[in-house]
Length: 100
Image (cartoon, rainbow, N blue to C red; front, top):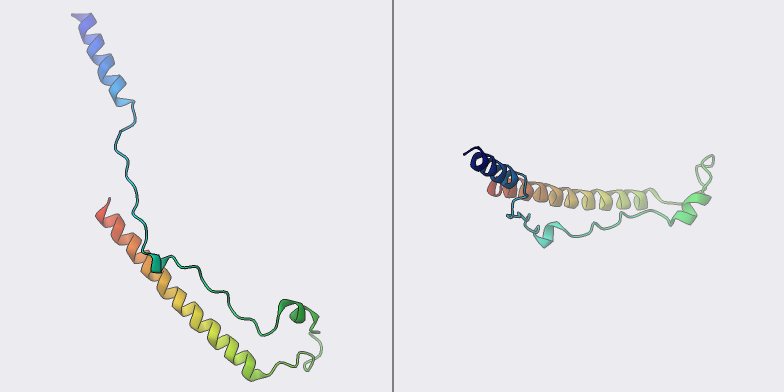
């Protein structure tokens, strides 16, 4: 009788140590939430920006209207990607609720 109990106990313990055969896969995110971000604009190419002397206020030759336009475009781009990130975060939260 002891041998049977030991065999049953060994069988139960060996079953507990195995990995479950069920594998969960996280669903793919919608493609509109996974687009690659656009690069932000610069006023001048990097090579020209590096050549500007910081001690001379007129050395750059860049107009204030150009700087303002670039800054405005970059803020617009950042705000669009902020909305995309919020959408992705909401989608992930919903998926976690549906698939705990």
